Amino acid sequence: MVEYYGKNDFSGILALVGTDLKGEREDYMSLKVAVMGYGTIGSGVVEILEQNREVIAHRVGQELEVKSVLDLRDFEGDPIQKKIVKDYKQIAEDDEIDIVVETMGGVEPAYTFVKAMLLAGKSVTTSNKALVADKGAELIAIAREQNVNFLFEASVGGGIPIIRPLQSCLTGDVIEEIIGIVNGTTNYMLSKMSFWGKEFDEVLKEAQEKGYAEKDPTADIEGYDACRKIAILTSLVAGQQVDYEDIPTEGISKITASDFKYAKKIGREVKLLATSRRVGDTYVCRVAPYLIPASNPLYHVNDVFNAIFVKGNMLGDSMFYGSGAGKLPTASAVVGDIVEMAKNLKNNLYLEWNPEKLELADAEKVQARYFGRTRATDEQIEKAFGVVDYIDVGIDGEVGFTTSLMPEGELAKRADALRTKGELSVIRML
Ligand code: HSE
Image (tube, rainbow, N blue to C red; front, side, top):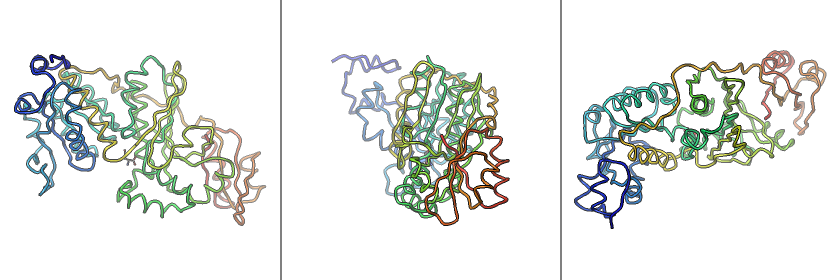
């Protein structure tokens, strides 16, 4: 049977050989891929390319073959060992390799390696949000100059399609708002605290034992990971560079089991949200724990799942939900990029993300309601926050309260005034 498989240099040959891609022919027909970093995600990519080999070949119109794997470690007893290379230049200088996967993490040396690959005329996909948030605009520009691609679907939301939908399906809309649960580790921890009434340290230990949280969990629990992800999404919808350093970021390390008692009493859950809302010609962003009501679809997103709520000015509300972290879900998004790039060799897919910095709107002007928990007296609370609604969950000497709307800029002042009277913990309300 003669079939046309797609726009690539081998489509003519494929048309003649039909759908049987196995056997000796694969050597000269296969498209060569290199993987930089054979850790959790990198090995997942190799596994998917092997396990779904045939279906991927049919979708691309060509076999994909992992030719080289860059890693400083050795993997004795693993068949991958014969493909291990120690110097990235071996990949950059290998003219047979068209597609490179970067799954090393961190900005350096990933940035140096990825840039070298693009300059050598190879397309690159990465799962590395630190790299994309920091150097995305520059790497996209280099890819455009070289007429290749730099794709990064896996950098936000793990296996959930979100970058490509924002870049293609939703390009007819002005994106008004993005609210994401984009960190699987903290969502797992908060879910466990909520379901089982456990304390922070206990669930952190569990998350580490399950392999969700890193040995050094700072990036997840302090919100830095989520901050980079919302910076990437906002850069994409704005078409301009959003610096993650400009986004006020607060993690979950101060959340306690008691907070969940109050949250439940008022029908809410605590979730770490990464938010971005359009204000005039720009966006206002924040990463912080929020108390969200059951009427919000994000309330129901539990465990390591991620969800990204997107409001378009024409689309209205939509939500992208799925496995936000983990080996195969994240590798699945990387392989999706590989297929896209394989179908578009020497055809740059235009991504709008120019390097000119977007000045974000002042987050201090955003009006919000707050939940507080303190040992101060009602009089002291009302002196600081005005009229409040009290919540009593039977914790001796402590009271919870919710405030009316007030600008973020006022929160610190009012909270500091109350803190002089007793401890205070505050969580924003959505
Ligand atoms: N540490 C990240 C998380 C991995 O827990 O979501 C996926 O980016």
